[in-house]
Amino acid sequence: MPMQINEGLATLSDQIVLVTVLLYLVAMIGFALELAFGRARTAVAPGQAERLKQRELVGVGAARGDVGAREGAEDGGGASGEGGSRTEPEPVGRTEPKPAGWAVRAGSVAVVLSWIAWGGNLAAILARGIAVDRWPWGNMYEFVVAMCFAAVTTFLVLLIRWPIRFLGAFVTVTAALGLGFAVLFLHVQAGPVPPSLNTYWIAIHVSAAIVASGLFTVAAVCAILYLVRNDGRPSVLPSRADLERVVHNAIVIAFPIWTFAVIAGALWADRAWGRYWGWDPKEVWSFITWVVYAAYLHARATAGWRGKAAIIVSLVAFACLLFNLIGVNIFLGGLHSYADVPK
Image (cartoon, rainbow, N blue to C red; front, side, top):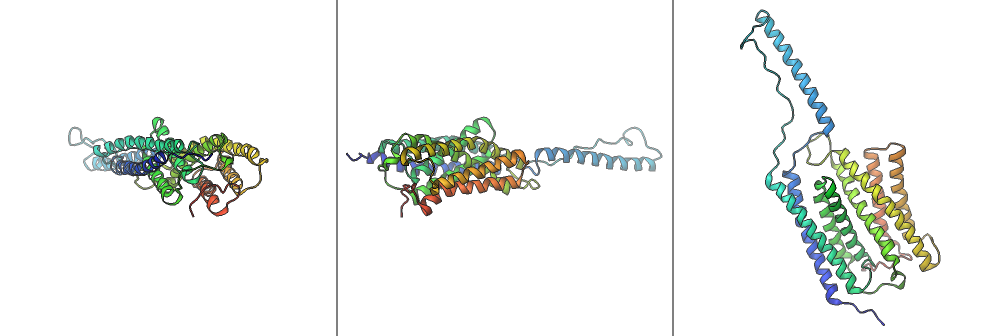
């Protein structure tokens, strides 16, 4: 008996995705306004700034002391009272522009909008799943919608614990672009999936891949900001050290989840095709992605890689991830060519 598709719910899911794109874009504008006008600009990293300030204080104090000594010698050894007194050196530092209150409020509104958009993203996934009566990530369109949801979830959960609101503009625009790409180029009508996908393994394997991909996406956004950031110039972004810390923490959390996804995929392959590993393009690129992320963690932990070199390795790993998730399905095919990418 053919599967009955709830066309009304399927259409509603598509419409919610479009509304979610708009909400993410409006939230991005709010985050961008706060980033531009609601944050003080910093010229150097926090530790560097303090050291430079101390050096400036010492230098100015010494210079004023020399001037005072020369003036005292010219006046006959110095004078007491008002004429002979020296004023204390004023603290020297960079004056920071006062953050605009309206911009800070715009950032708070953007957080609320992000949660509303997150709810819309979740509602679209649930409506699609109920409409087709299966786990709603059986093709590339559904997977990308879920991946955007995972990336925003990662940002909002981390935001509860750490002050990473500066990432809001970049994560929300990434989610909006991802959903827009899915709607324009990957969208397929709701329908059944091949028998090999109609199993509980899709909930285990693909769910883990989605969560890990969301974390890797947040890490990649921070990695790109790291390359853009220049600690020697005024910037509304955090220091490179803070950005690199977010990159590393996100990858540390995502890597074991991705490892589990690869193992679960092998177990699913044995159940579906009678072998754990067959060097299918999707399997190969999943393993390549795992190897490059493992190389990043290994080099950082043992060889002490820090800074730009480690960041570039993390971005190479993310490029492998994107090719594995999208490129393999479009260009290489194989046993995993059930992505239903529109021709």
